[in-house]
Length: 266
Image 1 (cartoon, rainbow, N blue to C red):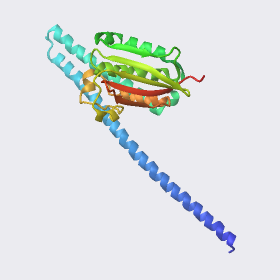
Image 2 (cartoon, one colour; image 1 turned 60 degrees about the horizontal axis):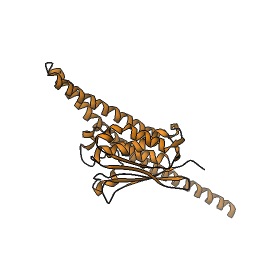
Image 3 (tube, helix red, strand yellow; image 1 turned 120 degrees about the vertical axis):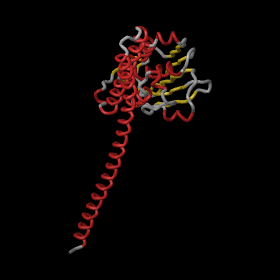
Image 4 (cartoon, rainbow, N blue to C red; image 1 turned 30 degrees about the vertical axis):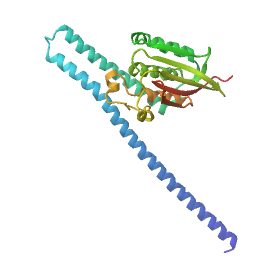
């Protein structure tokens, strides 16, 4: 056997060993990822079941009371019906939010992109909340240049601002100011900030605000009828557009968000 043949054999052995080791490594990585994925899915399923159980249990309790007390006074009966109806709205919001997050994560290719006028989106969002804004005495500040246009999915862009505003209205308190601004536009990227002048949240909770179903205090979202997914939707929607988002407590009070979206090419 000449030296060349020996070299060929050694190279072949090395290639086989490298292939085997690569397969083993890939298998371990895949198995680890699969285990992590299963764990995440189990946690998500558990969270969803917990969130669904609360309104369903409430609705059942209200209806059982109505059935057991057919002679209940009309005003009390109406109050129970209203509470049951409010819980059905919460269920509807939860299902819609879960469907949106699932679509962003698992079927992003089905979300069409187009030119989105941020000024129009902001106008529509604040119009949607106009009654609640007036009731709470909230001051709205919007600083956007005309034709601030990004390329993205309009539904998701709307969801970003809508969930930020709704978060302020739920937890910011009365008489606050909400502020939305595009403070810079560089290299085809728009830099936005949104803040309110409410009370903010304890520092130790900031890093977890974007987690699904995470609550600063137990029952906070349940009492206000939220799904617990609002800020998670915001993070996922920003990421869909190739942007990033961060949150901080303002020195003068309230929460402030900074996020980026890609603008329309010149």
